[in-house]
Image (tube, rainbow, N blue to C red; front, side, top):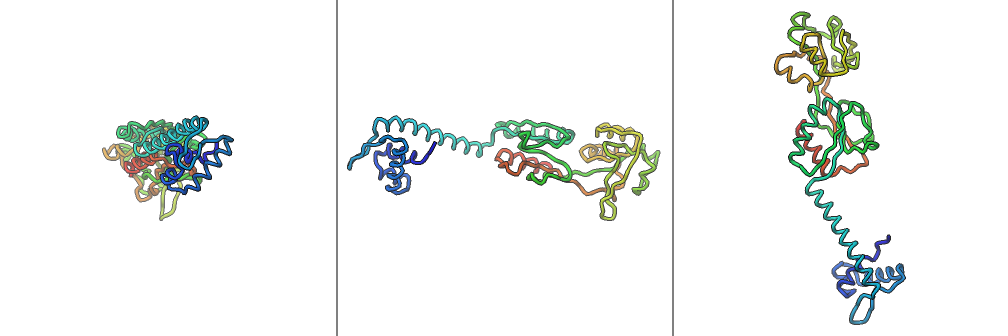
Length: 288
């Protein structure tokens, strides 16, 4: 459908004057006249009776006016709806995050966020696989560590620290390692990788570690460390509480790798709507 001339037609019909219509639209009378003439030619009907003193609708013009008025009213309503969405955030947000970090950090914060913005609906899918945001229809993803996908926009929300730690009972029995090489003589509690990350003299260093226990679950590794079974390297959200209580003790702090970023990412070609921007701002404030 071509929209040219529709607004001019409605203004002329309601004001019964080309001159008054042009004044209210802040355009020239000649422009209004040209648009109406082009519209009549396109529709192949006469919309107005024109005299030197008055402009009035033809029968066809009255029918056309009723439909055009409804269309313009609908456009006005659509514009108001968008304005309301921007002034009062509402609608749906679909996000994804890693399982453990999502459970412990992101979902509780999302719940707090929704207490403030009850008109927003959130669907969260937790997975340790990096989901395809575009294919999955995700508005937002939370990623940890180094980012590899340059096609996405990213905002840093906070940081995480990886700690090497053990229980006092283990250290009392097996001693405290003071260098990276001493890890060879300790039982290291392994996750999904055989290497632990450190920094030595300003350079990244990966150290191969061995041990009698391997889990693909961080909570299982924490429990093993608490029970004195060995030394573990895990992010702060697994061990922070136990470090504060003294149940675990940090080791090799001088070799600790730099903190890793916590990121909110979203597709580069997707407009960051007010509701999503509001959530990202809230997460950044809470995780900073």
